[in-house]
Length: 216
Image (cartoon, rainbow, N blue to C red; front, side, top):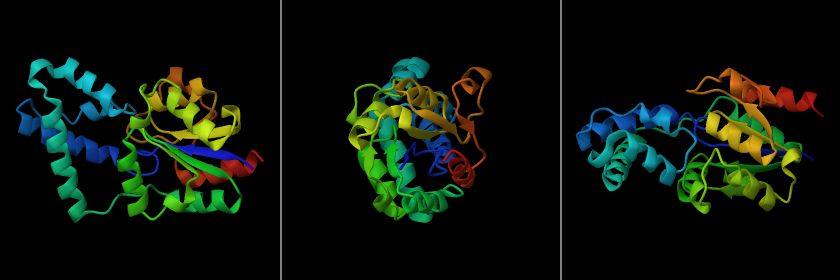
């Protein structure tokens, strides 16, 4: 029996592009300019660490409560009109993992409640043995803590676990924890430095099935 740990945004759901739109909206409302590019600057980080990056970028003009409020307004309206965009191959991969008795977890920098809401709204909560959100730890990706906690809750050694990630911070986090890293790129394209820590680089989640079949 194997173990697979998923990042959420950009891996399971095509939500990183929505964050760009949300930050553009919030930036304009806050009077600091369209700030969609901050999605790339904070990719893979939890909220507390991301706030520090925003503060460095905008200084006193940045108010965390305003960002949270306007971002929430945007997402609330967006999801009244749109479904959560599920990544190609997610349902196939989850069914494959369940049928082959894999342990499955989520290790997302998003708050636990947000993760739970996304999983519930896409009817996939039942697939996961463990769900870890970024607000369950003090340290954010790229520190290894979130993957170490997921492995501990799964009662698995990290070197027995595959971690599926799309961001540099996420991949470094999983690698530092001792997990085997699978990159499925989204907005960020891998650099030569990060290539060195990858176990595999695949185009989509469907390809993960073939990869796991070949590693049995």
